[in-house]
Image 1 (cartoon, rainbow, N blue to C red):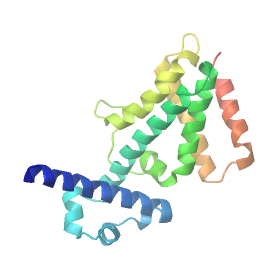
Image 2 (image 1 turned 60 degrees about the vertical axis):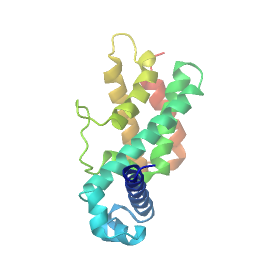
Image 3 (image 1 turned 180 degrees about the vertical axis):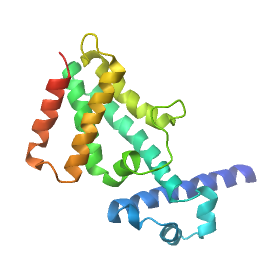
Image 4 (image 1 turned 120 degrees about the vertical axis):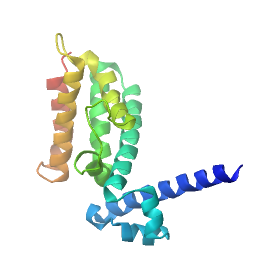
Length: 192
């Protein structure tokens, strides 16, 4: 391995450590606790080293969001592939999405509520975000209904899931009805 390859590997390892530490800190104490000073202390590198990877907290939030989007896409695809039939896949997608939001509240917040400097629904949208949307789209097209554009249906389905995830996290919805809400969403939106 050349010196340049070793330096690139070390740089990538430091970047992964920064993102993992930010994510861990955010999940434990919230995003307000994630500062460049605290991250530098936790990873035992100086702040200038941290800034050589990310210009600031906004870029770190964006990196966490991209990582989360990639994980969400994998989770939804796995859930859909294990389900039977169009309705089963739609229900599995919904449950996987809501479960991800519940298990990773700070990551979910970075993905959809904080400014991570990421473009959505544009040509410049980063691939992990496009892939997470595609994981929904590729499994919902068959339940969109006659004459309904699959992309538009997927946007409405996603918006509904986001609403449920956000309201559940904020404790605005009674937790005991979570499963019934998911079933209702799938039954009413998925035309079978």
